[in-house]
Image (cartoon, rainbow, N blue to C red; front, side):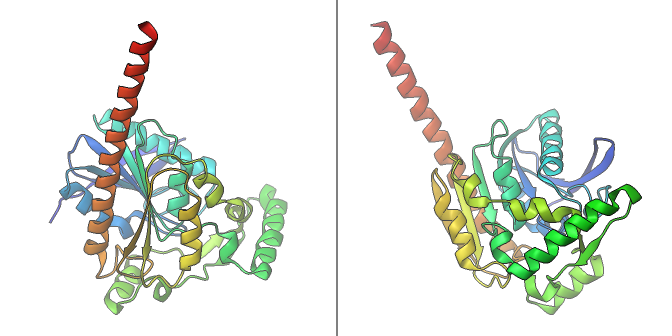
Length: 296
């Protein structure tokens, strides 16, 4: 069994916590999804470490063991968290080479694609957008709720709606469901302050500007995100891309399929990083040849 450790830092004064494993010189950052936390990615962290990487999975602020208002998300907040952990990895003497995002975390990985040194991305069970996965009435309720939230902001109140996604929507086995329930791994409500920004997230638009190698993995028994949504994200990618089907439900890493799912992602990621390295070597060689031609 791979040994994991807990890392801690502060992001804008708020305590933040992550699970880390491995001692490789190349690091992979693993990002959880909406109303989730890092514990659901532990098998992925362990398998990355076994493959020779330094793996790190943080609880975004407002999730898991990290501080901050529960469930509060925004692009700026998430990117600030990821930058802070990126710096932490550099201080540890490792180079961040790739980001793996699960569910909504895949869109956060896309948003962070321009971090220096990132050579590959993997998005697992990731929708093209939240907007296309919600009915018009639900979107209307979220928009009204968001406006109400802005009205009560000065009073320090937080309006929330129940999380419509249950554990039986994302897990299959009773053992996994009971374990997730006992550990309280999925938040039961979502703050309406998230609504406007999350509905505006546009995965295909971000993918169209993504030229580094990217893996889009779909769990074959995902009952939460339709294949068409994940496929739309894949089709929009501008750079080298890999479509990968892995066995399991939406939370494929936490159910009995965890290790096999993680192994498939690790293998695909290793191939993408190798291809990225060879591509960079080709680009460097062509630049050198061009420089010689100009000098001659």
